[in-house]
Length: 410
Image (cartoon, rainbow, N blue to C red; front, side):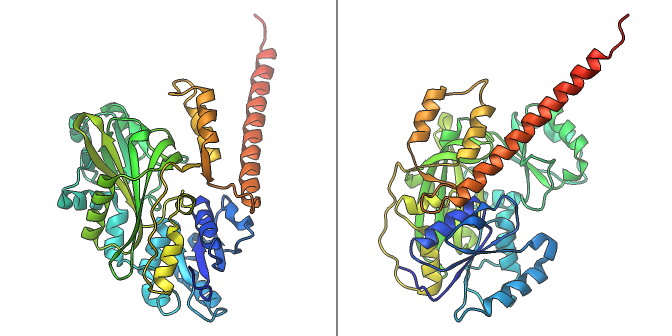
């Protein structure tokens, strides 16, 4: 399928990037992986050369200079695959510098900023006639007490832009169960007042969430679509898929393509919708201008989206006729284990049922029997973190015990 003369540069080697690497490797595409994080275990893969390049330290200008230096080693333009919103925005802003030397799907910075900005996407949905949860966009000057009284609870507080809004450590969002919870959050995080939105929580479990991933070709034609259904996610209720399956849904795909047409998108996009039984409707939740982090599922379910994106940029040929295989289960062992421990008090399934569901998985975030090192790296990291927590708990217990034993007797 692929033209081997163009190397693929995968920007980021975490779960998403490693899924792209494996998908491209199936068609023998030469790959250079670029990583900047300790959790980028894809750097251990035998399928790609890897280089460390931290865009946050180097800055956009320097990052582009290094990319341009590297591309001189190749006869044909390399193909760029961004794996997060930050990289997607960097390519949009630096198009003039990079387009003469690289191939990539491009969306103008104005549109891409609006796609990444959750408050802007709410307005796009209203224009398209697509239902969204009730939403409030916070402003720096407003008194939050009044809108908090009128807003439905529980509600979820989300950053307007994920990668440059600094939530408290370890938090991607915040769930408020009352006006008091909401106001206390902003009292402790005053700087987030104009960088967040509130959204009503749509009723139903995680299994009611569908995601449509589409490739809109550089010409504007619909290249390919794929639909997946979440079964579990971490954090439960508000996180990323840790266990799910390929499952086509006509209505979700129709709504996703309508929204993509309105925003004039090109390249990959992943759109999430949640079904609410009480009104028999799907609500738009969010959109990401890239492949989702379970990107290994596509090829495993018969639709190799990364390779189709590569083909669109390098050959401009007609796409092969492909249809996804439904019922292919994907799992992130690490996050699904976190889900298991997080839900231990009110878990909706038994341990045996959980083990049975895990056994159905045929697509994995890190596991690849021909390329085991990324899985071993991820597993080793998890074990080290577990040991550190145990050691910390033991030390805390010993300190408490020592202070109790030395307390004077009255």
